[in-house]
Structure formats: structure tokens, C-alpha cells
Image 1 (cartoon, rainbow, N blue to C red):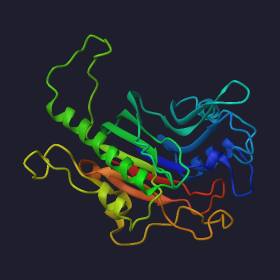
Image 2 (cartoon, rainbow, N blue to C red):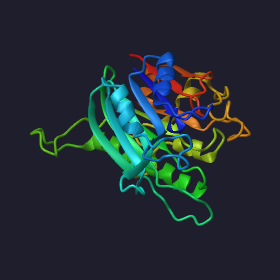
Image 3 (cartoon, rainbow, N blue to C red):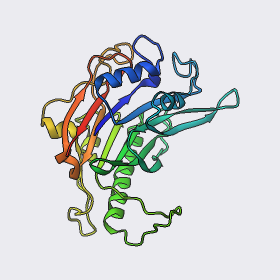
Length: 292
């Protein structure tokens, strides 16, 4: 299983051109991905709302360009445009594997008067993979507000814990094909996206904290989340994945895009790579490979 994650900046490259086809070309050049997780997908946001954009619906573009994949979109921002249509901005997962279940979580958006901000989401899908059911969660946390990021990290931990506890304890199941139909609750999890914090940030450590049972001991049912790069490379610095070429937007290049996996998936991790050559976005894509 190969999963590629990329903040595509609404398909806008360092040259200022918006081109979803170029995004897919560079993604395919990196590897024959089975799951594609995208952040910053836009629809009906023409420039200057999103620089370089003609207002194309990129959710539809990527679905059309990958006809053998199941497209799963989510819009954190969904507002009325001047033309009466909907303007959307959010994330997307496209999967070659069957998508058993989709959950679209609205992340907390607590009041923070000191900064601008936008609504944020966590897109969660359960996939039927050769490694068994795997839950993939794709997100993009708030950039300007540390208060909101902190609340969003806690919500992600809560969603992970809830699903794992359902997997461990759910006993009453419906198999009639109704809306109550019981699909697998996978504990094996991949969490990816643009987290807008750096590796040394306390929020990075918080995502990796163990989960606790009611008596305060480590929960036997909720596997911890681990940074996949750190699992493979220890204290070796994460590859830069933001601002490598865009010095106008980012005077300093840094890392804020990560892929976390649950503890029970660590034995399947085989490789983690970052494409440091593409200039099709202000971020660099990351590829995680899992095997039996």
C-alpha cells in the first residue's frame, strides 16, 4: 500500500500557474500511489480569492482525472459566492481501494479575536486494503491560531480513541444493509496532513501521547500514534516540506506536514520519502509505503 499526502496550494505552482494535471503528473512520478490525500483543494474561488485560479472545481477535476479511484471530498469552507454558487475549500482523499465508510468531522473553531481563521475538518475513511481495514484521516489544522490548533489536536485524539473503543467493545451489530449496517471499525490508522506546527512543537508530542483507560493506566484498546518518519529514522531531522522554493511566501523553509501511524501499523511501514524536486506547490509531497 502506497499513500501520498500533499498540500497542493489549490494546484498552484511556484510559477503561479494553477494546474491539477501537473499535480497528478508529479504525484505519479513519485510513486504508483494507491491512496492520495490532498489538502487545500479549491472550487469556485477565482483570483484574487485564490491567486492564479480561474474558479475551477478542483474536487471534480481530480475525480475526473483519476477515474479508477473513489473520490471523497470535504469542504471546511462552504460559502455563498457572488454568482449564487457555492465556494468551497478543503481536503480530499482518492482511493484505489474500496471505501467502506466515510466520516467528515468538523474540528473545533473556538473564538480567537486576535487572528483571522477558517473552519477546519478531519476527513476519515475506512479502506478495504490488502493489509486489512485501515482508517485514513486527512486534515489541515489552523495556521494563525495556536488556540484553535490545540483544540483541533485534542479533537483528533478523541475521534481516534472513539473509533478504537468501538472496534474493541462493539457487540450489537446490524448486518441487514440498513443505515445501522456494521462495517469494520479499524484500529490501524494513518493520520496525515498539514498540521501547521513544527516537529519540536508541543502539539507534535501531544498527538503521540498514550491514551489512558479509566484507571489512568495505558489503554490496551487504543494504539498510540507515531510519527512515521521518526519511527524509521529516529532523531534524524524531517525533510523540509514547506517553502523549499517559495521564498516570497516563506522566507524560511521548514516542516509542518507529517504522516502519523498507529502503533499496531508500525510493523508494516517500509519506507517514507519526500519529493524535494517538484515545484508544483509551495509544499513537497510525502509518500508512505506499507507492506505485510
